Every structure is written in structure tokens, then in C-alpha cells.
Length: 162
Figure (tube, rainbow, N blue to C red):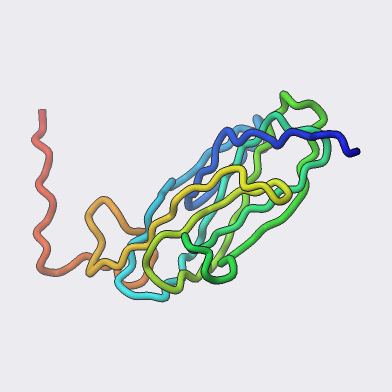
């Protein structure tokens, strides 16, 4: 009979534009965190999508898979990254950073960013793709085609100087 090995605990699962790890300190910076992508047309190709995961309470060599799927999992994953994390001590924190370029989303709707260990889903984060005529002032993604400022849109009011 095989010994029971507990699954690692997910401390964080974050979607962002970029992940920077300082070579000297090992500190991780997450740049441009988001949970929605606005686009005037679909399919849309997102230039860069990064996924950061922090795991702890793992034991030994642990298989992990990070994947992005539509919410109903009606089609194969948009992308999938597999690897193994070796936990020498269950108290350690394993920081995983994956970067996907040119990720193609076929239609608007809800997607899921998932972290798996073996055949167990550990956690998932929502990622919503929204069809928009033009992006709201505080949303969207710079660099996506079709998002220049509208010529008829009035400029934002200036803050009063104090």
C-alpha cells in the first residue's frame, strides 16, 4: 500500500503581464496584475500573459501543471505547462513563474487559470474576456490592437493643484 502524500498548499495564484525576480535578493515583483482582458474583436491574441504561483507544504518531488482553459472545459486547454517541484522541506515556499507569449483567446467569456498537482486541482483563478467597443479608461491592455483613444472622447478632468 502506498503512503499518503498530502498535496501542496497554494499560497497564491496570480495572473499578470510580467514577473521580475531580483537576481541578488530573490524577491519577486508582479507587474500589471489583471483578471479581465478587453478586446473589440475576437479571437484576440494577448501579447504576454504571466502566471505566478507560490506553493508550500509539499513533500518530495511533486508534479505540477499550470493550464488555461475555458470555464466549461469544452475544448482543449489554450496552454499548459508541466514540471516537477522538489520540496526538501514542507516549510519551504516554491515560487513558480510561467510566461506565455501570443496566447489566443477564441471568444469572449470566462476562462480559468488552474494549478494541478498530479490529478488534483489545487486552485483556479478566473480570467474574463470581455468584448468592448473601446476600453474603459481604467481597463484594457496597452498594446492590444484596436484600443487607441477615441477622438470624440473628452479628456479626463485635471486634478486641482493644492
